[in-house]
Amino acid sequence: MRIIHVLVIAALVFAAAYVYRIKMDSTARTERVLRLHAEIREQRDAIAVLRSEWARLDAPLRLQGLAERHLPLKPLNANQYDSLKNLPERPPTLVRPGDPDPIGAMIQTIDAAADASSVTGLVPAAEDRQ
Image 1: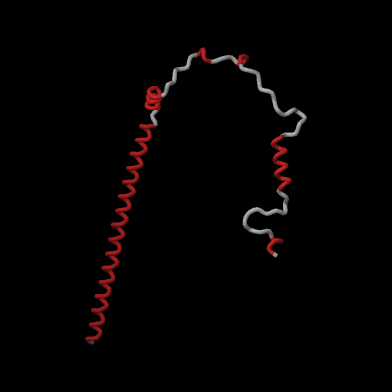
Image 2: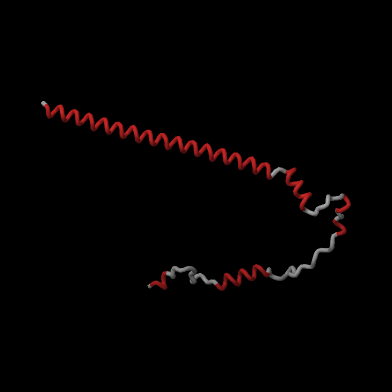
């Protein structure tokens, strides 16, 4: 009878220790989750601060003031534009209408030089490995 009492007490002590370990693990994980939530909140706050700073730096009035202060630009006048008839003539074309396209000829030359049996890269062709 005493052996059964000792075994039951040992089982109860083991169960209590196991429950305590589970409680401590869950407490540690809860603390970790809370730390992660706090870190996420800090990161979101940092992102919000950076976005507001970017909006301030990217404000059109600020950029206009910087451009006026640091760039030697003058405002546009309506008389600065000219009509299309005063533009110079189009330069002569170097390729006559009946001649082949020079770029197309270069591409055809490259394609002809690379025949279908040549293989590029480090892997040899199937017939070379045999």
